[in-house]
Length: 194
Length: 194
DNA sequence: TGCCAACTACCTACTGGTCGGTAGGCAGTC
DNA sequence: GACTGCCTACCGACCAGTAGGTAGTTGGCA
Image (cartoon, rainbow over all chains, first blue to last red; front, side, top):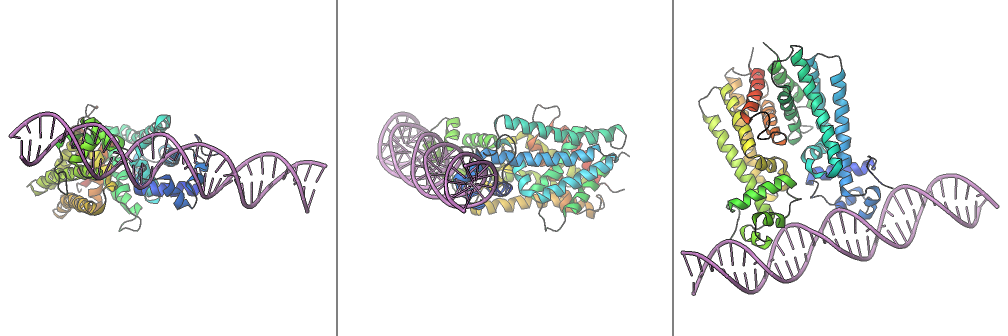
């Protein structure tokens, strides 16, 4: 049988679906289109997946899972708050650069997932954002960061870096690390108390 | 006849379409749905519009036009670079707060516009982003801002503020101005040379 | 009278999804 | 080694529903 609640769709199918969803948008992309790109018929695609949404959900889940575990590592580390922010920007930016299609689907096709699965994703998204907030909160408490509302600051950082999915491209003038360094320079000087 | 290349669709129709596109996404939204919400039949809707895409294009164009003219005012003003940045964040943030549906369509449904119309939008988008870059470039040249690549800094600011469309809501804990103030605090301290 | 905005009725194309069936690989067993 | 049963991956044909879009008509207002 095929992909149920859990995530276990054949990797090449996920890869192709990710690319096509990212290029044309979830609703505009058709199952035959994906099947064609994989090299099988539409009916065969339904052997691996119960519904179209399964594909979308699998993409979302894989992505948020990876993002959470990468961020968790930073939050739980022994680094100083400033280093955590720097590392966060760097890791996230390079993640976006490497998984641009997936990130595009994840960020642009947010409201396409429905039902209780959507709830699952919302919860994980919150978890992720709370982790980022926590870094700022820590820094403020320890006196490393200026006294500004951590949630808003966190959203500023997230926006800065997430927005990269709309413009950053591998092989462009700057590498992901170089971009992250600029972001970190602005952010850290901005957060540092005087 | 109805909406051709130019923008002249009945305002209430644009308004409804904006709301529905923002809620369900362009491709997921149907013309009957929009017609129903306006209070007419689908066929009547086609009296005002030649194709579904006309609606989308009208929304995009109105929005980028407004954004450009608001930003132009700031760029062309006599303010100091730091004040320009502050004003930019404030104006953009409140614009997003006031036109959230429109901004959502504009930012999330970018690749749905096709053909030469898309080209038109890309050019305007570039114009807009270049204006933001210019503020940073000026500030760097005058020694008001730190020496960092203006394009990347501009994208950082744009990301910070644009990202607001995903989370900011009127009636939330903070007003658009309050959020903009936090953003400005971080950004200006981050850009200020030492 | 003539135009406008709306209507009813309809068409075609295509979508997500199902059905029944097939080809081949891999046990086990007589 | 031939026979059986089972499983995975796939296919062609098909279906109901719905999408965008069109044709022709009507009522009201200037």
